[in-house]
Length: 191
Ligand SMILES: Cc1cc2nc3c(=O)[nH]c(=O)nc-3n(C[C@H](O)[C@H](O)[C@H](O)COP(=O)(O)O)c2cc1C
Image (cartoon, rainbow, N blue to C red; front, side, top):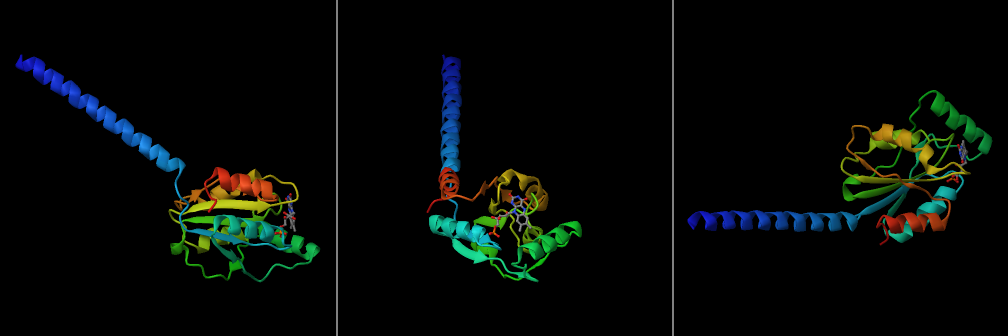
């Protein structure tokens, strides 16, 4: 009789443990799906204004801080000169200096905006990941372009964050309000 009671007790304890683990897992999954982005920074560079428009819309919708990156030397606004300067940076692997001092400790999620140049991120994006400590931060890249999809930037960005423990997201092409709204809504980034 004693043996039967101890077998029943053991089975009950096991069942209880299984129930507790599975309910705990459910809570964790719900938390992951509804995880808050925390303190948001929208940081961007724009030469002719398109990425700036997108960044301002994103800032309003997320309620984050907004910072425009300043480079030294600054990029020319003349289109022909800009194409030459930016192409030379790629060819010579130049990582242009970024002048902004940003206290990244304040932020949890960083939306990083840039124009797509030559089917890839501009070279100051390399500097961005070298200059700022983004360890354990979530970085959501967004880009504007004439037609190139966001995914052309992905392999370059992945290489830039390699070994830095950055939570790099796929990001999105931010040429329309519709695309911006869709991404922010689907990724729980609306304020
Ligand atoms: C040097 C240079 C290279 C560009 N390369 C591409 C490209 O590869 N694919 C594309 O779709 N658009 C390209 N564009 C267009 C820009 O990505 C597009 O106009 C962008 O929205 C500009 O952003 P901004 O106004 O914030 O500077 C290029 C523009 C410049 C100046």
